[in-house]
Image (cartoon, rainbow, N blue to C red; front, side, top):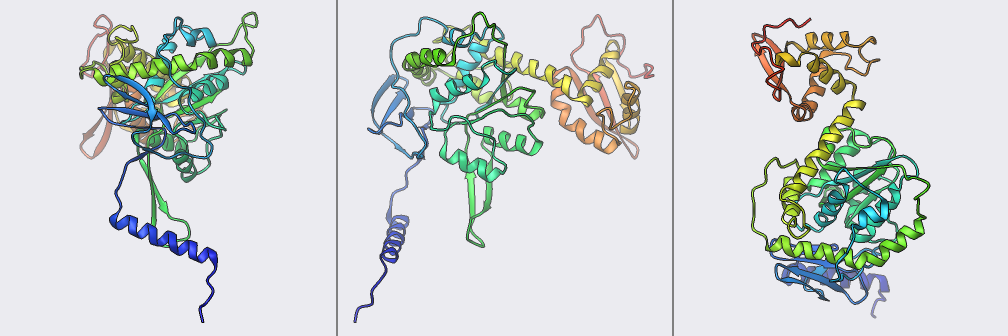
Length: 432
């Protein structure tokens, strides 16, 4: 007598059998989410029901059936089909009145860099007062790169949830961020540069789940969001100005304007990618931390009618502005720069133990350590100084670890100093 088998058991057994056959005899293919490519081509999934993509090489781009393999999430929406019609105006300035600070170049460069198939992608941090259009700009940019049913979300409370979200979204956009704790800052740094995350697979004891991916990320908020130097190194900052009520446009007007030119904007991005794939490698000077991204976008400078080296300069200026702003928020960084500036004419600033340095820094403030925002002990001071070394070096201040007998000392010098300001660098000046 045949034993009756439940339908769900038959289905489960069939799936397991097919999975086993596929693992042994099946071919393996690289699968992309929205984007796949290398130095020879870039293919972008349009996300429409016809499974069309834009296939880009150094010879041009075309829309057709997908040549590679893509997966999609349930929330993914379709991109506008790119147009070969050119844009006659600077759409970024026109849509959001973003003038000065090279913001148009930085945003356009960031959009192009989102489609860089290999390498890190910097975060775009949008800051400004209420009503300055931060969330609107984030929505517009998300729609140009990776439209979805929920274009802005809150930053997840766990790193696992962040990677699950990234598994299903090519771009991540986190709205209304106020305080970014260091651990979350570290998560975003890893996501920007391609670090991995591993955890135990659910409902198992020994199996491991590993995530490794790079995603374009947008953060927006009112206050200074990025306070960690390593996150600043990986970010582009857009400080939104207040909108004059006399020229304010409604959100629907702005969205309608951008929607009408989305095909031309996407076409400009595709044309820029063609020029990048066909360009020869060139040496760039003063590259920022995200060097691969900077080199990639710089190859499109001629096509975009920018001056050679203009994009790298814009990135460096943007980062320097962010460091200056950080100086206003970080008490220790502020104290160190004030202390060094006071002795700038000597070139040499300080050499001694962390205890001596903490005493000198404390004397600059009326409050006691801890209450003033300064570390309350020499060990914490040394640890925080190590994290600030790259920032201070960018500002022209070098911190070197020295050993004198059994003591570990810190030496502080100016490495960028006007010769007219220097009076001596032999370390014999009065430190009082």
